[in-house]
Length: 472
Length: 96
Image (cartoon, rainbow over all chains, first blue to last red; front, side, top):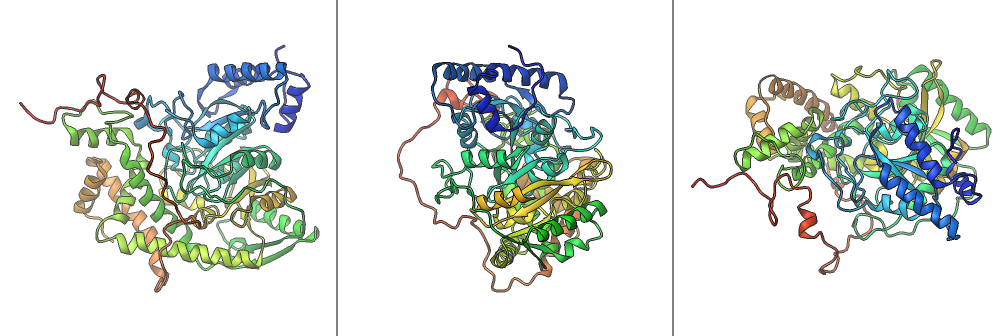
């Protein structure tokens, strides 16, 4: 039976429908493969894994027929950002320098999804090496926003957002170094989670800034976000920075929460009027529901994004040193010796934004500037973390709009890196301090463009974060 | 701060990147803007503050020095841009 008209509700329903034999996993995969083929006008998918997804569906259908118990994610059709490894499949971080590269192993987060019987349908476009806030920095072209294709979907996980928003898969994985899940989720009307640093293994995630990067899900609902999070979370011997403390399996008991927000944010002239209005409405709704909402201030608002750029570019310049045109990836044809192999392969292989960040990172790490910028950045990071902890000592959550305004036009900010960097003003704090944060839809502008509401919670307490996200 | 040609040259060399002509001029302008942007960190007093280096609160443990799952030689060569049966190949290093 071919599915002609399927509409996705949530992941738990898919599993139930498979068990009730309303349709088969093969029906589902065929439906989504055809839908991607027909409807991906957004440049979201870089590659569709037709063969392996159909094979996985067939295996799952056999399990159902033989009555073997099914995993929690049975039938979940999931796309993965092009910086997550999946054995025997290509991965490229949307960069020419990894053109043709094939994964030799599977990322732990992806493997955990597969172990629960989900099906990986393809790899999704992103900003090159996850560097960007608009998905205009991909070597394979910009991604378009399904809400309005003249707009960016946000970045860097733009393909992950666009694919779910357009209904081309049920959920997707992205990575978040400074907002790369939450900002595109906000721009496309989805739920996007950045878990606590160390909660999900980074093994098999192509590194951008190792002390900031986290993998997380894009979903239609908070419930699906929680389900995917629980499956992926936990210690992994292959990532020494993954946390040992156990993942809570229970839902948090609902209670009355205290939410804090920054005065300065509300009064910022850069805030879109509708963003401000909707955010204030949410605050009133929380108060009416019996929650406490307190205003506070943050002494380092102006330093958040600069601190983020000093430290992430330093880590990137080091992490990207491995691309040398010798062991894997693309090598320049023009090279006559070893040094020119390095120089030419990197010059031809990296895009402009990646080069800018490597150069800035090399600058802040170089002799003579290390103390003034890199060490200084690490000290400011401690102050930011301590100040964040202090706020969370008197409130359960810190809330803000996810972004100052809705999705912007493709090309609008392409020539001004600083304007684009300031896109990250509300999202980078969670990565600098390590806390979990989630973006949930809070309404739309008069033109129908989605806006997101961000909740930042205490480290390793995603359960309570999900409880709060369900309220909003 | 002023971004000199010398500084661009030095950073490009450390980064193993080439910038020629217009690209060099553009990178100079971009770096100037970005460094002015991160200079705002210097308005914060960090006297006596320890740098935050590791984000993990748990102590990191050394793993046992045991041979584990590793890539086979054949697997390691799958993605090589140039290889023969056993080795990565690079352009000639020594002239005859």
